[in-house]
Structures are given as C-alpha cells and as structure tokens.
Image (tube, rainbow, N blue to C red):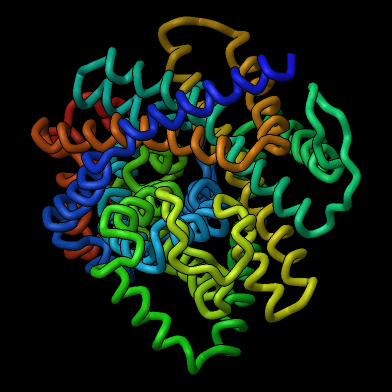
Amino acid sequence: MQDSGTSIAEFFANLVGTLNGYIWSSALIYLALGAGLFYSILTRFVQVRMFGEMIRLLFSSKESDRGISSFQALAVSLSGRVGTGNIAGVAAAIGFGGPGAVFWMWVVAFLGSATAYIESALGQIYKEVDDGQYRGGPAYYIEKAMGQKWYAWIFAIATIFACGVLLPGVQSNSIGNASDLAIGGETMIGFLGDSVPLTKLITGTVVVAVLGFIIFGGVKRIAHVTQVIVPFMALGYILMAVGIILYNITELPSIIALIVGDAFTPMAGVGAAIGWGVKRGIYSNEAGQGSGPHAAAAAEVQHPAQQGLVQSFSVYVDTLFVCSATAFMILLTGAYNVVPESGEVIIQNLPLTTEVNSPAFTQLALESVMGGFGKVFVAIALFFFSFTTLLAYYYIAETNVAYIRRTIHLPWLLTLLKIVTLVSVFYGTIREATLAWAMGDLGVGIMAWLNIIGILILFFMGRPALKALKDYEAQRKAGVKEYTFDPKKLGIKNAGFWEK
C-alpha cells in the first residue's frame, strides 16, 4: 500500500512538473516582459511619471457601504503580493538562477508596474455591485470589454482552482517549514500513512482555525485585518533587513555589482537567471497574473485610473522594497547555495541538504547576524505575510465564484470553496515544499497566460485603460477638485456601473 501511495505521489509530481515545463516555457517569460515593456511605452512610463500621484492617492479615498478605501484595496492587494514569494521565493530565485536572477526580478517589477496599472484600471472600469459590494476582475472585463464570455469563464474556473486549491498550499507550506525550523523538535506523528512533525500539525491546525474565522466574515473583515497586518509586518521586516545591510554596508556595493554582473553573464546560465527571476518575480509581485484587479475593483474611488495607479505602486513595495531586502540579506551574509535544476553545484556556502524552495536561506541569513532570534523572526514574518496572502487568495477565488453565480445559481458553491481552501491550507502545511511550489507555479502560470493575452487583445479592442489614464491626466491638468468618469464620452462600452 505504501508503494502504491508513493507511486501515485511520484506520478502526480511528474505530471505537475511536465505541465510546468510547457506553461513556464520561454514563451511566457518573454510574454510577461514584452507586455510590461509594451504598456510602459504606451503609458509613457506611468510608473515613473505618476509616482508622486500614486503616493497622494493612497489616502485620498474612504471606505463606503459598498466598497473599501484605496488604502484598504492596496492592503488586500499587497497581502497577495507580499507573501512567501518575498522570503522563500527570492531564496529559490537565487538558489536555482544565481544572484543575477534578482536583477531580472527588478526588471519584471519595473515593467510589470505598468501592466499592473492596466489590469487594475480595467478591474475598476468594468466592476459591478453584487450583493451590496463591489466585484470585478479579469473575468468581468474579459466578458464586457472583449465580449467573450467563454474566455471569461475559463479564466474564472482556472482562478478558482489556482487560488482555492493550488496556491494556498505554497503559503501554508512556508509557514509550516519556517515554524518547524524555528521551534520544531524531533517529535513525529503518524498522519494519513506518513510521519509528520508535530510542530507542522499544530501550526496547520492554528492557521486553519484563524483563517476560517476570517473568511466566513466576508471581504470587509478581510480588508480590516490586512490593512493592519500588512503595513506593520512589511515595515518591521524591511527595518530588520536595513539593520543587516547597515551592519555589512561596506560590502553592499560589491553585492549590487554581483547581482548586475551575474544578470548578463550568469553563472547558472542565461535561461536559469532570466527564467527564475521572471518566474519568482511574477509570483511575488503578481503583475500580469490577474490577481490584483480583484482587490482594485473593490475600492471606492472617483475615477478608475486612480486605483490603477495605487495598484501600480504596490509592485514597487513588493519587489523593489521587500524582495530586495531579502536578496541583500541572503547575499550579504553568504547564506545561499547556487544549484541549478541540472544538479551542478556552482556555489556551496550551506549544506546541500538545505531546502532551496523554502525560507531556509533567509532564516539562516538572519541567524548568522542575530542568533536564534533570526529564525524565529522570519517564522513570525512568514506567518503574517503568508497568512494575509491566504486571505487575498480566498477573496480572489470568492470573486470568481460570484462571477459564475451571475449565470448559474449555486448557493452551496461558496461554502464548498471555503472548505476546499481550508483543506488545501492544512495539507499544504505538512507536505513537501517542492511539490507545493510546483503546484503554485502551475496556478500562477495558467492565470498569467490567460490574463496577459486578454489585456493585450483589449489594446486592439478600444484601449479602455489607456483612455481612462488620458482622461484622468486631462482632469488633473485642469485642476479639478472632484474627478468624474464618463465611459460613453470616452467611447468605452459596457461599463455599466460608471454609466449610472
């Protein structure tokens, strides 16, 4: 029976690996980079020109009965962006792609900031009021702007599966691994035919219990939790990283030179550096993946472009701040190995048994400076980062269930989603990291393919997000005190909410 279970597990792992090989081919890598460059040029690099406006808009809108504030929407979005990808994902990018992978994470973040504006503005333009709250996202704008309901349904179903089943396991797995590394003992418990550390079982139970309490409370409760936790933990984590960087400040120039130099003559190979940098970059900042527009659509704003700009800023926070902090900590302390997927050992500073697809590099980096507290701090940071990401994933999946229920009334579907998400979270806490990340990559890749193709097609079908940006800039130049948005005047069709 054990052999049968092992063979099934191996078959499943091989299947996921094969699918990822196709989905994360070089085509998706260049599609993501190309779409970011394309929209950066078309928006005249909105991510640079409008940076000051992004900061101003963060606190300019207020919560309403139907919608959340811009800052709350940013917090919900950041809770999805700032997660295990910032701690364990950066470690994997360095471990498999070399230090140069960090440079390509920066590139995809900078270009992806323009993509984030486009998709989030689209989310606002085509949002709806559903059961007293705003709903929107790629499924909504694909149906309304493209007129292709079948494509919208494919995205909705893929996103429910990705955010409800595949991706939660990555976050909870990192929580479990970090907890086990920080405080775990030798106690093992038999569970479902396998031996599992007691620490992971306890951690999984606690995470599921707290998560269940919040997700059964609705989007308002999710927004209120994330707006407190995300800024507090992100700031605390960055301050900790800054302390380590200052402690090793004389070595920082050489580390930056290492990152930039290895980006163009990568020790792990050009494909590995770019591939892992872009893959983990998209996983972390989610630009182009299609997850950000769900939170963007829930915001109460005067003009769709405003939330597009706020979401564009979130990519900076995620990658250029938090991911960079992690990368500098790891590289400054030398707490990393570089072992490409080919198996060739290029750099070995740690035992080869150190798990790459885990927070181990980051925890060991902090431990080298701060002793045992370093491991515990990363475990705490990962708990909050990953937990809020779980909330964001659930909200995204719930929004797509709501989209499907517009056509087919299935009252039990939302309850089923809650149960499946909690099961996925618990199982993810105790399973192997490699399989968890592979399943997560599968979910991210499917969503990215569908969404990026969608927003590129929309350029040839009316360019609604670009029209919204031009209209917003014209009103801003005119010095209006209250912004308005008239989609009919701009030639934007099917934006029913704003037409009213």
